[in-house]
Image (cartoon, rainbow, N blue to C red; front, side, top):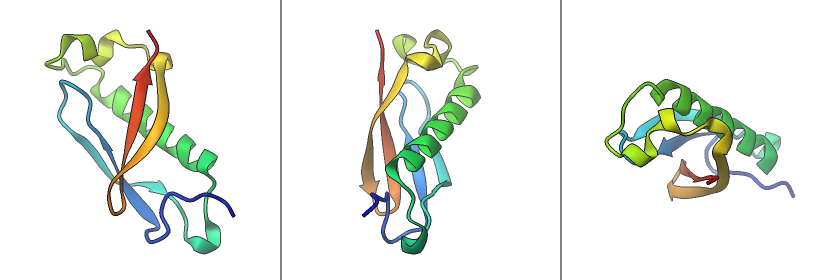
Length: 100
């Protein structure tokens, strides 16, 4: 059996709560397919990484209120996806760590 992100929704909302920035919510961010076309965890993680990159690129020019967390000071290559946290039905939050 292949692991799936959601067994009840074909599309999910992705939430990124980055310190010092407004919450970033992207609806229908990840196509997880139906049970007939379930995606692998690797496929889902790749889609999440692409959306995190989109957040990073869109918000990098914004100066956040937390100087240590300003995206302009953090290379994207230093970010690692370590977990996908289910925060509500059909809504997931990536847990990202930074290499120091």
